[in-house]
Image 1 (cartoon, rainbow, N blue to C red):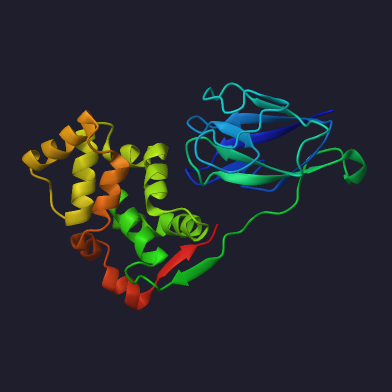
Image 2: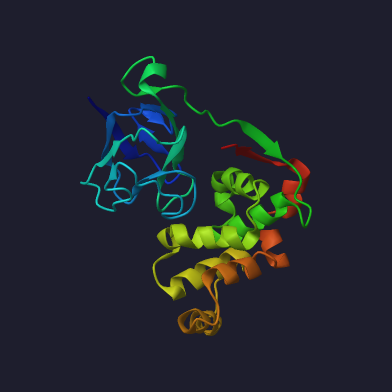
Length: 256
């Protein structure tokens, strides 16, 4: 028996599977499942553990795992020795993921895949933005990479990752790996530097300043992740993201 999942990228944060955002899926050992893809730009991996890129990929019984070709469906024949918990995850956008519960036929209520539940993010307010806190680090890094207007979009996932042990450099590398900054600013190093400079200072960058950082990136003297970490420590960035206001009023965000 083959069960099909209709899969598409709803955004850079969510997969939509059979009309649900990031559902928990249940699959049965010995059955075959096909993720029918409509997700250009969102290579779908089956994984044993969540991680950026292909980290944690689980290939046993999987065809076209992580293929960048949206016309190639991901087919998963669930082995008898598959672990009880697996994941589906985009190879480009870390936060696009969901859990797969793996059961044996005798333990399954039905031989078809079912949606156990839909994870509904909880809205909370974060108010600790003191220097050195996770909230401060995440807000500053998001501000430098994307700009203050993206705090609402990315603060929740960033805080969750840092609370789970990811450090600032690792988070900066993750941002670089996703290519999200380039999708906003443009593909060239000059575009990237100009965008980050304006996020941090609130003014347009002088071409001579841009050329200094572009040369560092071109030569390998610095990486984008290193520049993001350095930018996130600048006082001028705190003014651009209204750090005083965040500390006073808090920031509403969604948990993931």
